[in-house]
Length: 191
Figure 1 (tube, rainbow, N blue to C red):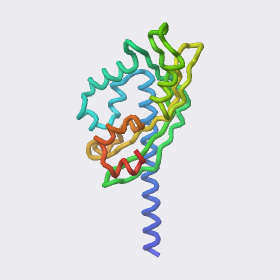
Figure 2 (figure 1 turned 120 degrees about the vertical axis):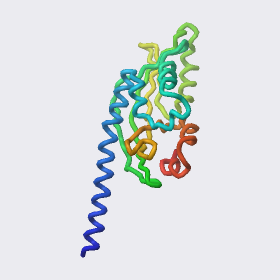
Figure 3 (figure 1 turned 180 degrees about the horizontal axis):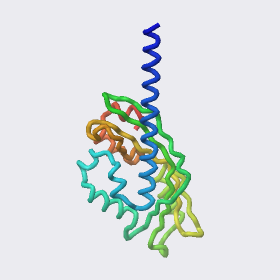
Figure 4 (figure 1 turned 90 degrees about the horizontal axis):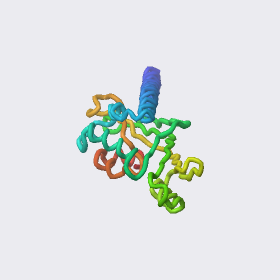
């Protein structure tokens, strides 16, 4: 009887801890999205998995993110949408915790040289570049609308001091993911 009660208690505690983890992750992800919309990239990077900064400083990352959104060829705006944020169950791997987050991301891309723009060709190229997205041309705004289901990996490990931090985990991030995460983690989330 005591053994059964102990097992039930441990299962309940485990489920409660996972639910608590998920309830911590969601508001953090909402804050990241809000800061992205406001182009507050320094704040976004405060939530970023710290091992990323072994490859580039926070200042370099802010500069890169800013130039990716507005450069001589195009501007890219992140727009509000129904994010439908989904957080997976937390997985414990070698004493560290991980969870996959998926959410809708809506972007509008405008090429600056509209006169030489071939919309059909550009649309096809964008569909290849964003193969897992819904890409369309908006005739009214002369922009390309990109609706994508984005992925982030929430990580709580020694490098984060047990605090949840986030890492882009989209298909195009595969090379960076392989530099930062071991095979067991990549396999656990099909990355």
